[in-house]
Amino acid sequence: MRKAQSLRMKGTEPKAATVGAEKWRDKNGGGSWKGKKIPATVIAKRNETRRESSQCIKVTAPDGTVVCYLCQTDAAKATGLKDGSVYYALKRSDGMHSKSGYKFEKISDAEYQEWKCART
Image (cartoon, rainbow, N blue to C red; front, side, top):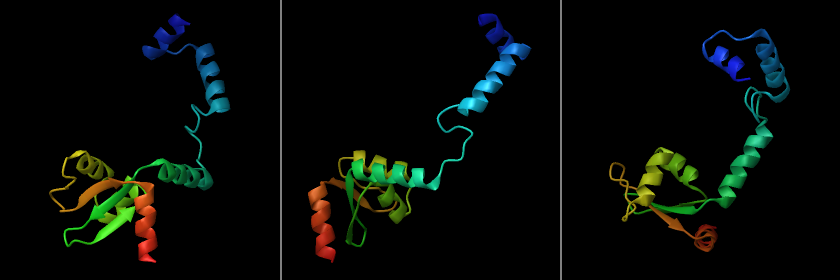
């Protein structure tokens, strides 16, 4: 096995190892989803699970308006920032994103529900 791997690394794959690897890739797809089209239902369920398990975010705009979001990704999309920028702002002690002027703050689910009920 080591010799076959060594030959593969050198670019001269032995025929038997190549055939075996192709069979495995055909059967397994190279991983759990690699090489396969992920169904839209799976993506939607994964996104919903991520939103349910993530921290709620309160965003204060430069003009003083306050909006709450279920997750960091939703807050990033709404403000036009990258997800990493929101993450960085949340790690700061003041929660400010200096270039945009938005302030980000983690809140509890109860605070989010209270804000949501106050809007309706």
